[in-house]
Each structure stands twice: as C-alpha cells, then as structure tokens.
Image (cartoon, rainbow, N blue to C red; front, side, top):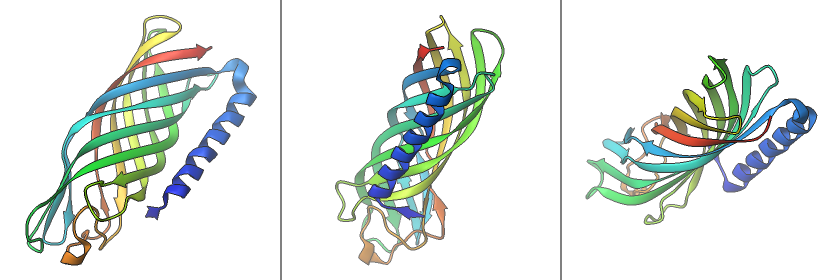
Length: 213
C-alpha cells in the first residue's frame, strides 16, 4: 500500500496527539521512557520479475518513546528508525545489475505486553503499525512511502529507578505492490512479483531514560 510523505507526517502527528492526550490523562500514574538505540539490520531479499532485489545489512539507529500504564502490564510506544544501506537488483530483464544507496525511515506506533520478573528485569513483546519511507538517492525513481507492520520482543534491565538498558529484536515489514519498481529502471520490464514484504530483521540495544514515575 503506497502512502505519500504528507500522509506519513500526518500519521506521525496524529500518533503524537493521541499519545499526548493519553499522557495528559494519566500523567501522575504513568512511567514515561525515552530510549535512544542502535543496532544491526540483517540483509533482506524479495522477488522481482526474473530475479531478486536485495538490501544489504548495515547499522541502524533511532529512538523510542514509551508510556507504561499504572499496572505495568502494557506499554504504548512511538518509534523512529533510520536504516542506511546499499540496494541491489538482479534480473534477466536488466542489462546489468542495478545498485543504489538506500535510505529507509520508519515511523511506527504500537503497544507492548510487559512481563515483569523483578524490579530490575522486564520482558516484553508487541506489535506496531505505521509507515516507512524508502528513498534511493542514486536512482531516477522518486522515494516512496509504504504501509508497514512491525513485531518486536526483548528485555529491559534497570540499574536504577531512572536508568536502564533495553535489548530487543525487531521485524519491520514494509509492503510493496505488484508491478512497481524501486531503484531499478522502470522501463526495463522488471517489476515487483506480487505483493511483497521487505523484511528488515534487526537486533538493537539502547539506554532507557525514565523521565518520571
């Protein structure tokens, strides 16, 4: 599903509005966490006409904003992730392999289920929805914005009431429509084979900063 960049901004601002309203209603009883993070995104591939397209693995970075409910069972989360990499397309319909730099921006909102083991250790898992912007600065095709689903699971370890560490695995799934092109020549007859999901799998670590509790 294609979204334009304006729609992506509207989605993010709407998510901020909902989160702000929820925070204002529950502020005295909630925990608010900011978690800058970095990690590694593994290579991913998807089918195109007569071949495959591939995003190489590389480092990523981003930030999570989390609001934990008073019963410590649920966290509502907003996140931004940046992933810069190299993209390659190989097909019998292309004269030669097409390579390009790729820049992926993810804006997501969702919820995590929390399992508190002790005051220091909490496990979590959840789902999120949002949009991803795929930009290919070396190609002729413009950037495109895609509907994206995310899954994540991990652990938090708190060293104090205000500071902790977060380790998690992320699976982000931008959906691209049949027949389209991304960074390769759209006049080559090469297109995306059916509805496909680009599957960037990431492992990340971050530092948790609790603003209040």
